[in-house]
Length: 347
Image (cartoon, rainbow, N blue to C red; front, side, top):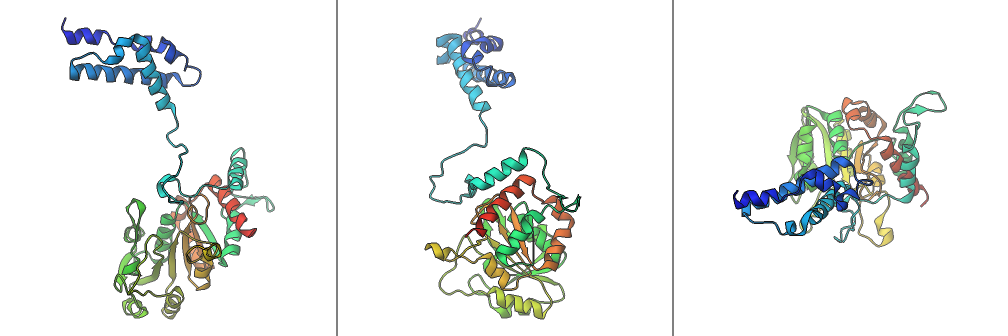
């Protein structure tokens, strides 16, 4: 028998590890399948070490109890939730990789109450007939933003894509070069436009875009005018862009819808709290935009969602588009969003 074979024979059998105290005492809290995987993985690691190094792993000197302790640690690692709470010490409050905005207590209570049993998700209790799931938040969104109508999808990228494809599929969307943003996860506005079946038509330059640039680009192939809020960077110095209100006036002249991707979606004026100014959703709606899209889980402080507000006819086209069903949100998100929006009414 070679030395390697002798070392391999010292590896404990998996069934013996399962019976050893460090593993056996976990049987009431960790499923047997997880314990079995942990024991097998532990033995496999030790076997590889022997085969690769031709020496005895130090843990084998402690006998089966020492190996079982390793297996128990591995079992705990395998059984812990993959998604779990962390401490955000990055200095970035709304960190994309750390879950963005924490939910408020009332939102958590609403999710718990709605999730425990049945709900009127799509049922009109007064009329005794099928209802509309977004009715639970539409009136709140309209009251808070001044919009004529509103709907919700699962995130803002989905909201932008749905708005583009519902209003301008197969046509061009005119957008300033200075607003062709990329945010986290390599999300790029041009990519979303392409996915929505809309052709990109860039106008202006990176630092300056004028109203005449949009006007000169409008033609038979134009489907809409798009404005994008550059929330994650700023161009300063020799710079100018076209205010939403002027873009809306141009769109009306040519009977073109105008939409804005507002990104973070602020509902209140941050300057009240001594913070830098950010455009509010109400400001964009007041400018006359046909559609405004924004996120639910950033500055708004709610769950992940893509909120779409604006003129009734434009929102109705979005709501009726087949893609809207593929992007719809569930009852838990709706419950959290409604509870979050209600807090803004108490200001």
